[in-house]
Amino acid sequence: MTRSWRIVAGVALLALLSGCAGAGRPPAGPAPIAAPRPVGIQDPAVIPTPSGGPAAANCDPFASLRPPATLPDPGQMPAGTAMARIAARGRLVVGVDQDTYLFGYRNPATGQIEGFDIDVAREVARAIFGDPDRIQLIAITSAQRIPVVNDGTVDLVAHTMTINCARLQQVNFSTVYYEAGQRVLVNRTSTVQGIGDLGGKKVCAAAGSTSIQNIASAAAKPIPVSVPDWNDCLVLLQQGQVEAVSTDDTILLGMAQQDPNTQLVGPRFTSEPYGLAIAKSSPELVRFVNGVLDRMRSDGRLAGIGRHWLGAGAPAPPPSKYQD
Ligand code: GLU
Image 1: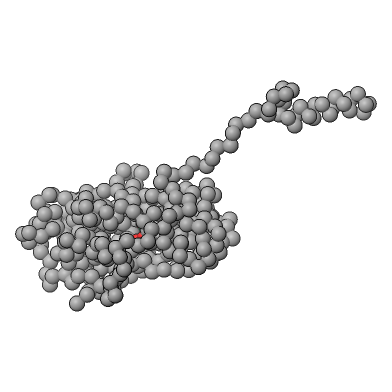
Image 2 (image 1 turned 180 degrees about the vertical axis):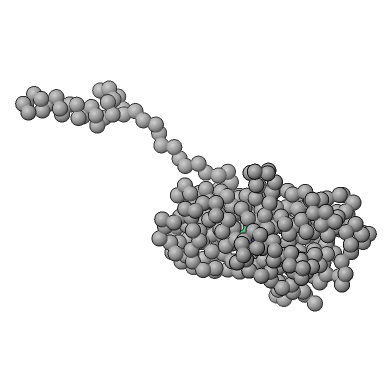
């Protein structure tokens, strides 16, 4: 190559490297777009101290109120009870999740909210009305569960809700209808093998859940990131904005089924017994619901709901336990 050709080639290369921009103008190009963030995200999460004051010393989260020896028949609710008020209204009002696949999610094919929790709540409606369809589902976040029970928006909450002593200060719970445990979900390409590998890494859970508290108190010191709904966590994981999601294995199983690029890792590191939350002002409704759950344990319906949503390997329903 002659000297003059070498200069021409050099100028052409420079023009290429500068993106063909005109001399003197800054290189053109779009400003980088920040990854979308769900409304209400807290990164890092602000962890509230569990409200309701110190747990009662004699608190046993597994022990609920004993049901009556015989349940009233549908349409025969005793006067003056919460069940009679529900019957007079014509429908049971239940606070549920609408984006937790398998437990409470909106089926896009039907537009209906379906899942394990929904089927349990429908049995309460069946016991009051003789018709499981006499039910109104109100979609709520994890953080709204205790407020909607206590302000009377709903008769009960069926929302993968862990019974614990702090919550028992504020609401009543049925007996345990399923026992979950907290685990970790990561992308299949991740080398993380459990909560112990997540020190200094962002880990997502819903605000108002036991999960976000458990992440914040994990010995490895992950960085908790909270969002309003569980699906927001799955999207943040898919986008690479968090390293992991950590919550009940039940909820994580639904996420893994929705996105086969994700997987559950590590053992359970907490126990999360699920109960239906009911206002403390309606102990008779707790006893009635416990009677319904006992009947579902003995006639196999509760086990059947578990198998339907979680497959043949679903664990047997835990036995009921009462305070007296
Ligand atoms: N079981 C946990 C809880 O009650 C997580 C589930 C949820 O937030 O829906 O806080």
